Length: 199
Ligand SMILES: [Zn+2]
Image (cartoon, rainbow, N blue to C red; front, side):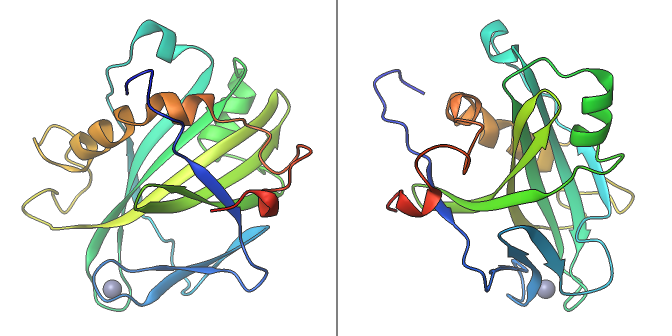
């Protein structure tokens, strides 16, 4: 990203009726996300497998707390394979407890506050969690369509396959890393409510 480029991420509140997250193949709703939590359209996990993403960051980009992963899932309606990209940022150095609970989801993360993020043509879900070291923003991109045999092996993420989800996620995140990193983490807590920010 050029230094002269404007900050392009906009945020918007989610209506109380929620926003549907659709299967990229059959467009049926997999999940409805509400302002304070998601509701699954079916009884299985949206994603069943995950992996970290190898990413080449400049030293200054490695500062403070962050975590990224690619997760795989299968649509219960059409059996299409998809993957999602998740990126988490905290403006502090997280301790092991914070990493296990808030990054690895091994524990109660408390109430989530959800928003819609938009950058150019792209929209995604941004969730704010309040951690002991300050607010964390979790960006969930996707689900994007994936094709078994071409990008993925049936047993999980094939991170070494050129053009696979991890490769795609790395490029996807690197192009907007600085914006995601510097985005104010207290989304929804400041004087300006998200509803006041025009899209
Ligand atoms: Zn589907």
